Length: 261
Image 1 (cartoon, helix red, strand yellow):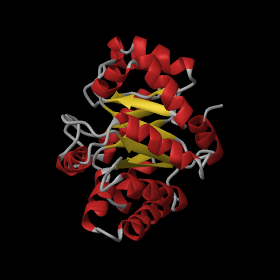
Image 2 (cartoon, rainbow, N blue to C red):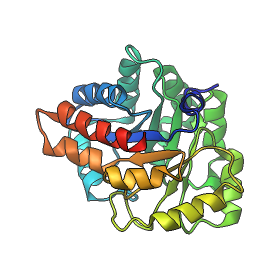
Image 3 (cartoon, rainbow, N blue to C red):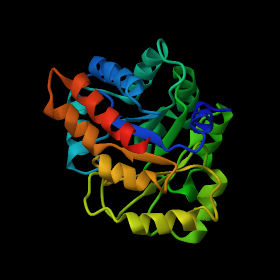
Image 4 (tube, rainbow, N blue to C red):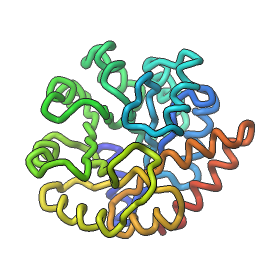
């Protein structure tokens, strides 16, 4: 059983908290400390953003974080090395890499999958690689027991959902609204209806992200989803508290986790 599957099994029906931060923001050493902060304060799964120059799915908060990381030269290889450092002290919290296909393609699917598995990565979500084109990458990931995670949008057709259901591992990520990360106007009633529909095709846990900013929205989504995914709120907290990132992040994560209890 993978770390991701084991985490959901151990939660025994409780809602998981998936926490996103950008690798290398404000720097790699701080990111390492913040990964431990997330794990120690209630994050069940860590989603680690791989900095990319054209993060088309991300709003201004995460775009700015990627730019700060890229300005320091943070690469995919650096991110993998960061996960390996995290694994020296934490062998149980799943880590999912979330990013874009170009850096993975440049490294090569097989070398990337091998390096990711060796570093201790558990799953990979490539935002801009459609399910219809992911077979080569998925095969490489599967050979190293890495979960291939997909985004499902409100506009995704049932046919494409069925394709993703056949190829996905770990969990699927339902985008709660049309737009980019950090968008507003979360409609929890619409999310609930969509998740009920998705469960007809998907047996994996369903996580919901985009637009979840506080305890109230986390609680509302957590009532219908298997996981609540929070990113922009955490990345903004890091940006707003230079030198005190860990304490500020710990407080926000603990609040979100309590809302899911």
